Amino acid sequence: MASALWQGNWISRTRIITGLVLFTYAFFHFINIGLGLLSPEWMEEFQDARQVITRSLLGSLILYASLILHAGLALWNLARRRNLRMRFGEGVQTLLGLLIPLQLLSHLVFTRYSHEIYGVNDEMAYELVLMWASPEVWQQSALLLAVWIHGCMGLHYWLRLTRWWRVLIPWMAGLAVFVPGFALAGVLTEGRRIYDLFAEGSQRAELMADFNWPSREGFAELFQTDSRWFTAFLILLGLTAAAHLLARLLRRRRAVQIRYAFGPEIRAERGMTLLQMSQANGVQHTSLCGGKGRCTTCRVVVDEGGDHLPAPAPPEARSLERVKAPANMRLACQIRPQAPLTVTRMFRPDGQKGRAHASQGSEQQLAILFLDMRGFTARTAGQLPYDVVFLLNRFFDAIVPAVTGAGGTVDKYLGDGLLALFEARSPARSAQAALDAATAIGSALQDFNAQLAADGEPEIRIGIGIHLGDLVLGEIGSAGHAPRTIIGGSVNTASRLEAKTKELGVELLISARALDAAGYETGHLALETFQLRGVAEPVKALPVAFAAALPRTLAAEQR
Image (cartoon, rainbow, N blue to C red):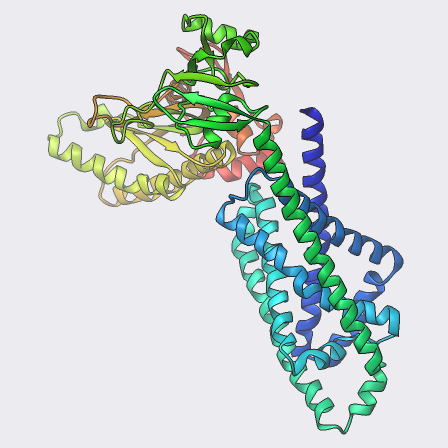
């Protein structure tokens, strides 16, 4: 397994590095083409400057090695995939990647190859004349767009989880639209100009001499080379498809049969856990902890075939002992069947719509925000209930948009406070969303207090606690009347941090775990250690006097 992991990391890093080399080349190549919109001389001079690097021995070696490795690893990954089901974006990027060589090979044959074999001066003007009065100009324009979109998607998928990339996305999106538009405008402008000079004949001989235009025999050989390269690529595609189908066939022959009581029969590849087999074949199989062996909700009774399973490892044995499991009960996330099995799922869908999954819950690592209004009881003493409700609604109208705007949801209102949850695809995004919400709440509170001051009313003070940890989200209650609820020790930790803000006289306390997840180096922050009631271990947290000043506080502390 360690070897497979190392191999996977090597392939991933190689594809990233080679992709960056090719994307950099494409960027400057397209800018070069776009200069035709401004000046033919600039276009030619920029190409000469580029080729000092790209046509040097080292530059050529890096460029073409990157091209071969990037394409080869992509085909290798396709051949190794268990199936061809992909997310829409991944499918689009893969399809574009497969279409690129269909036009790129012709481009290489009539430019670099013709330059090296026949001494053709393959400057931009030559390329435009060569393809202008044929469908090739549209095909090469499509190639430009395919290369650019494929590269932009790859760059985004690589960087999308980093904080600084999210900030740059609007600017990079503008650049992503500008570059191909600029290049195509250059093709149109310079292509019309140079082809008019070539077609009307007055400068044809001069241009052909300057380009060292290939002879009729030379062009015939170039077309043959193009055809051979195209055929070789089709053969590679065919071999990739054959390898993929052969691997699937071999996996099916090595498959093991699993029969579920009250459910289907499946065949799955040996080496997978029973839970993975269920998930891969669309069999509903509860797993609250996501296959970590902690929750035991994936446990099964092994009706037949248990003799072929190894004894439980210590972690599985401890989990089974905790639920007083009989001898024939195992955790589906821990066993890897090598022989046919018949099993009964302990937690299986009961047929009641809306409760089969949500009522069982799911475990996630998310950020939580507790907020409370300070001195609310004293402030509202003697007021009519209508006035109290009016004040609370005004307050929540002011601050809740800050929570939802950062991607959070208010899980519940707690009188003069609230509990907010930040569901995201990763703990890093969840934690950053909670910090963004706290900053926005602080700013919204300042505006709200300014309105209160204008009305002659005292300002409102708040306390906020933020923590990130493991939570269980599920429906709790009778069927049809079960609201979604979050459960876990992390909820209590966030609540206790909020309570501590009153003692410290600050608006905000953020746990070190939330800051770590959001990508901040906590070693440089002025953290304090708190022993919170009901929390076993001491919790380190960062006090912030005013929530609105959180970005400045973090920036100053990092410096």
